[in-house]
Image (cartoon, rainbow, N blue to C red; front, side, top):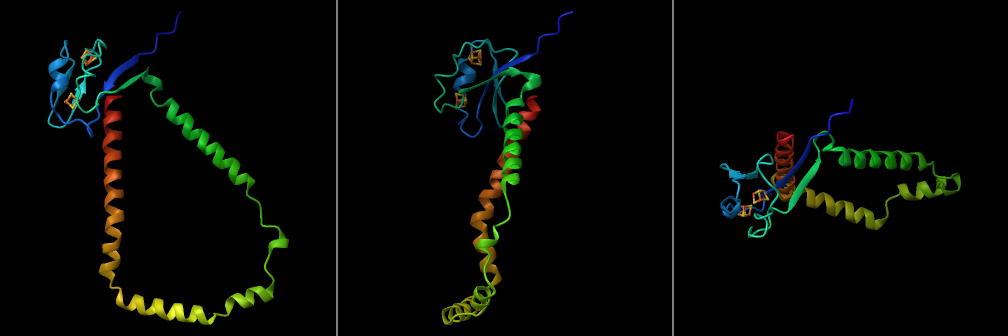
Length: 168
Ligand code: SF4
Ligand code: SF4
């Protein structure tokens, strides 16, 4: 008995980050495969006849990707890449060896390091003075330009992941 053929998805993806919701694609599609809701334009793969009529008129190039693969293997390439990276990381870990003894520092060198130089003493007193005038709110404020883009990227990634898995 022959094994059933894997179901293949071939679907345009419309990038919601680029789409300006001009409705050109929906009005162009000859078979009504494109619809939209309050947030996104989407292509129904079960209606789309792959005519490509919607792609050139899109003013923002939002409709430029096909996804064509067996549904059951939709994430296999990603998984292979991740597994490969894990294997590379494992080999790199194995290649890490202790520092040869000839590179160890002598006690005299270590003791010399422990003694602060005049420059270090000056720098440390300067740093202490700077810390005294740097209030906590300034530290938090300095983190804002870092944290906001990071949190935004995490939020967008989670949204995209939710979109991908909701199509599965
Ligand atoms: S490829 Fe053709 S059928 Fe499919 S969504 Fe675009 S215009 Fe419609
Ligand atoms: S034509 Fe392009 S920009 Fe306009 S609604 Fe469709 S995908 Fe969005």
